[in-house]
Image (cartoon, rainbow, N blue to C red; front, side, top):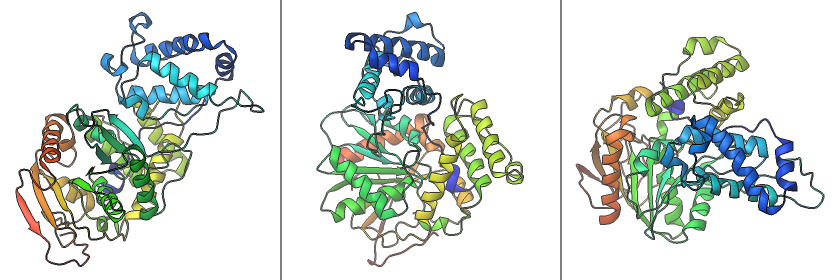
Length: 426
């Protein structure tokens, strides 16, 4: 499989099925009644999505405590945005919302958009985009920031995030373009400037702890460079089985069939699904038919909401293509900061995906940083992020952030011999 889209799963869905009557009812109801109307609507949708009796829903209970997973949250997000014409950040669903809090947020999103001369039946203007998703709230210690891999999805960090510790907030950085409202970034400098600005808004001062799985490690490295260049302090900088960007130099950006096949493969590895349409089948189809076949397969395995259109799949390909284009021929800058690299014991999957012979340090120990410390992780490129392996990884990262970025249980240390840029892959 091609790494360029084996990472390209997303977490957002397109808006469709706008309910003008419901929106008008909410706008015209007395303020004291709006929450009640919205709560009843949410209860009906949640009972359908989660397959539970409406009477069983406690409106104050966090939904994740009664079994709402990321796919259910994705579908509920779709329902709210499509029917009410509002924007609901995915971060809302990662912060343990209840029926009551979701209803309040939805009502505020509708009423807050009501201005003189605006048609109450029309959807409001989109809110300001931010790449940050709060995976887990915490105390006052510096947050851990997880950078998205190529496809922009951040669900790969969910299991790990649950076990970092209650005292540390965890943010994830998603790619621009998955919501369908904005186009993907076109350059590394533009992308990193946006990410750094968003991070400084929520946490004005470092140290910033950064981690990235797969190609997310490249973005973590680039964000570290951006922050250091701006005078900020970096704490932990960690990569989880990350190759150099040069592995993408010969990738065909026009092969949409391969992008779609690799989207299926990522979901199968990370989420335990068994999706798949043969590459030859997709390759022989027209552009539109291939996307329709991919969407049908995703719906069949509950990986796309029932009301999703082909835009649900197409955005993953567009974001993936844009981010591969950024990585192609990109040379990482030299930064003078220690780097922790986690390499899985079963390391053949990454080599197979990239078609490259990869060095033990994945190429990062060749004059790019002051020092690279290699840690050996259980599992393979995908399974290192799931189950007990993710728990073990979370505990290791927690210790590194507690003890300092250059400490920990290293296996191998590589010292830079020069400050010349390098792009070695093996």
